[in-house]
Figure (cartoon, rainbow, N blue to C red):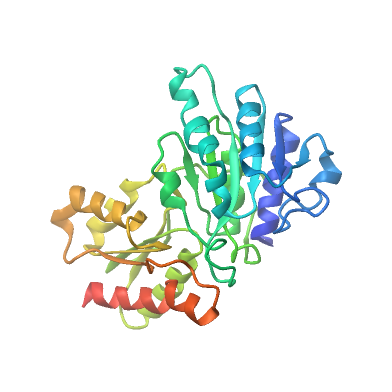
Length: 324
């Protein structure tokens, strides 16, 4: 099977779905001539023209609000928030309008909107450009939240998001764009809300998503050399959250470690730990452990950023502690 980058996988999904569905159009800053700050939309302006690849002013509230209106009136817009941190500028449009309109109209008005954005640290971009806010979006009923870790999942999940009739927050990680992976040339989709067991194991369950999945797999490989067989689950989506996949794994292994780049306090790890404790407590052979970013703003300094963000070493230490 061919190997392509995460960026190419996303671009293919956009191009193929825009060719399939004339309702789909793109809005965002620098997405046309420049091809997007991370080059995901490169070449799409030439292929589909300025009516469907629309450059916007630096006004997230403006173009997200316009996209909500477009979605309500028959289009299927895809907006690109250059950095996830800027979602706060459009919070009313996302949280109060897009997420609630279908419910408030009894299903008469749909909002088929995809908000593409990216998260995470690792590039020294500082506190205002390095956050992981998936917990915030996951907390809001009415939004679907997707966080692919591999090129295969990125393409398949984005195609599914572009066929969904609900608002989808599609979160990419800025350090994943250059990663490569096997992606079929033929048509396929990945369903929203279905987790994937990336590595089978019997001793401990390790749940993660987005870029941290790659670190989890590295840690699991090293743990295997010590005789610790780790089952790695990639959530892929945090809303809908595939709790059943996690429960089935914990019932087999009896131990659970959760790793994510978002801050520890009230992160997804806390929700997952609570769900497992409520529904599979009798299967647990030890405490649930969490690996996450420290509860401080993300530093621009490389050494400080490395100290704040979770890495392979912290995940490996948690696996050892879980089985110790």
